Image (tube, rainbow, N blue to C red):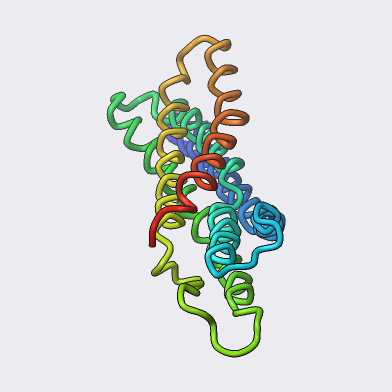
Length: 207
């Protein structure tokens, strides 16, 4: 087999792995929307005022629109490692750019699939539960025009995809212990940190 054929075969394997990572990210985003809606609903018990209903809906929205991000961030980390193996014949800067592009592809996939899956469900949950017209302050809308905090959470989630892919590329040539530490950070610490920031800092964000 010629060197060119071996080169093409190697690149095809990397592309196939990346497509698999995209599929895993998309699948997690779609499958975790419903559980995240339930979690968001449980964070505010027995809402009474319009403000409490808005807070409950925002909890549901921020978790639903970022569904599967924990899985996606690990996939982005793996994509960075994959790019490091793929780009051995390129400069380090070109390899890093490729890793960031791979991370952005995963991030865009996660947000697109989660939004597509969650929007109709959130629209159903945005109706006023009482009789008559909604009171003043009832600003539930899946278009997120009145929910800047949810948009910020989505942007932050996307940014972490880039960080994860860049970290994966950077750590590729490092010791195994450092790789283990980095994976642990993105599996355990990052999801918890994003959850706390989204629910307790961004959900109360003024409209």
